[in-house]
Amino acid sequence: MNYKYQRNNLVDSINILIVDGNDKDSSEEYIKLGMNTLFEEYRNILTNLSPINLNIKIIHPAWNKNFFEKGISIDDFHGIVWTGSVLNIYDNSPSIVRQIELAKILFKKKNKIFGSCWGLQVLTTAAGGLIRKNPKGLEAVVSKNIFLTEKGIIHHMYINKPKQFDSFCWHYDEVEKIPENSIVLAHNNYSNVQALTFTIGHSEVWAVQYHPEFNPYWVSGLMAMRKKILLDNAIYKNETDYESMREYLSDIKNNNNLKKDLKIKDSLIDDSMRYIELYNWLENLRQ
Image (cartoon, rainbow, N blue to C red):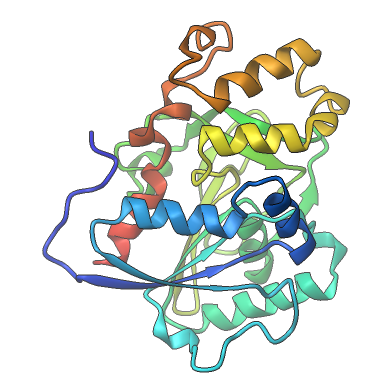
């Protein structure tokens, strides 16, 4: 299966707003290490997946209160994407409150919204749900054995997705209470809500707790950046296990000999499976 979905006879251009959930300092840390920021990763993968032109604008509500450029209207977009972030929703800082309030405004418009990780948490909170620190601790690098629910199996977001899969992730928090009229689409042993959908106001929300936009090479850089956190939280038993995974992800083609020992599933590294949620969402925008 080609991970670029096939062109159909619908719209020939899509306007997408990427809401960068991260604060400026965190984004600059990625840049200092030669990595793409979260919003750059999202922009790149959406552009690569789409067979038609995407007109993408990026805003940064966590940076300051004047985050809309002159001439940009929230009525101009076919779809909204909300990125990940290092923030925690319950800290309720101004950079967080601005994002929650923005989501509430967007709900009043006719929008199709996709959220990853922090994006799910902001959208859930703005819709009346609750987020808590996961009592099981940090889930990082790989979210393992995610299962689609019966509703998830038939939902458009998961067309052609395996019923059980692994995905890249990094989060301390989870959904404690889903918004009204929500449907849980996926779960695993770490969290009862790994994906959900709901409609609110005039908007349709698809959101996942993991990161379908991440790729192996970028995650290897994230691992290098956060090595101490991974070891302190026992995500890896020791430095040898950590280094094996980081090395594998840095070049999966040339390190294929490590795949079996690391128990890597194809759903984690095969583009045609890893990105399915995103290109199904892109396809949905054109309906």
